[in-house]
Image (cartoon, rainbow, N blue to C red; front, side, top):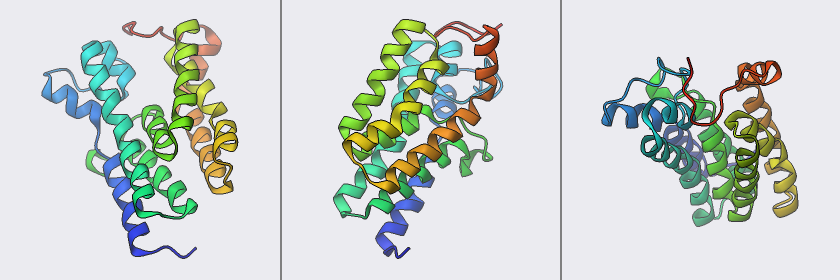
Length: 201
């Protein structure tokens, strides 16, 4: 693996950008409770929707997506290798999960993962987002919608940009997402998972 200083800088920058927690910052600026100690205790857009409403959630979602879009899309400007695209995407994703600025305790990563997919190719992002929106409309469960869309993401990448590095990266990312959603999966199995926008008791 022979990466240039530009490529190494892009990967490190991707992690640092990913480490900026949109949920925590938005909640602080809007005078809302800390999402790490309210609702599902997850600093992500779905929990912000529960505790702060649609406007706060929309800003959080946009911020989390941009964390994935910007560093990966920058790869096109610098004409980096496919491996660097894969590593930058994974770095931004891991930055969201384990943010250096917030004690390495972050969100579950769905929005940032989707952002990296848009950063790679708009078609990949649109396809994954379309599956999420369709599932959310039908089942009205955020976690299930995310899991289905991310399970299909490696197939979508194979169709649009069939590079082994990107496919392997997405398979690993999707596996991590399933692991991060293990409590949601347990609630789905037991029929106790909350609907989109519903406050947790």
